[in-house]
Length: 235
Image 1 (cartoon, rainbow, N blue to C red):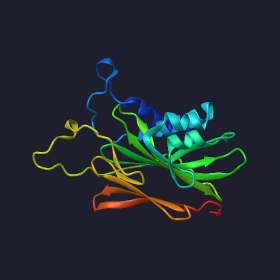
Image 2 (cartoon, rainbow, N blue to C red):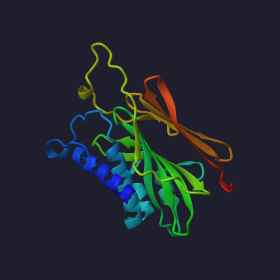
Image 3 (cartoon, rainbow, N blue to C red):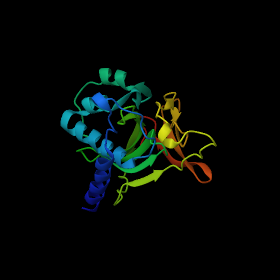
Image 4 (tube, rainbow, N blue to C red):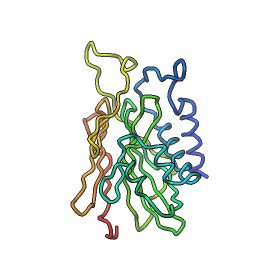
């Protein structure tokens, strides 16, 4: 019940701010105000999970993926190739976000949470989300692994928003900056304003680690480091 109430409050926030961002004449997206909206990220993650339950994982991963999205199977694979090669029955995977980290400008956010299968298998996921020009979020990196024990589910979805970079003298006001696509080379990238960055390290045996750093008062600080074991190895 407590988790349900937490999600209701977060979804209400997303509804007030507009999950898809403001629209201009003819449905075109105007210049977006660069601001963090972790409630929108939570709402998108929950919608992603609901779509997977209702339409299947292939449909959900296709609908919510950015054009350059990567998934690990077991090495990094473009999601479009993964979708074409994925065969067989789809497991009824259920998941929910527990933590959200967002850049100051909202151009990039990272979610972490737990997933479960009907047979009782559990694990965790980390998703890098990229804000699109229409204001919607699409996933850019899907990362995760199995666990021997489930993650502890918080009463509230925890959020951490980066401190905004100092405005340079004579520089543009936040409302005058448009959100360009995130800079990324596939396994690393950063928010448009540089206040959030991530990096995935992949070993020869496909064990991997994702690290996320966020700008705080003292500078860039690592806020997340999650490892996934090599295929076939117990966690």
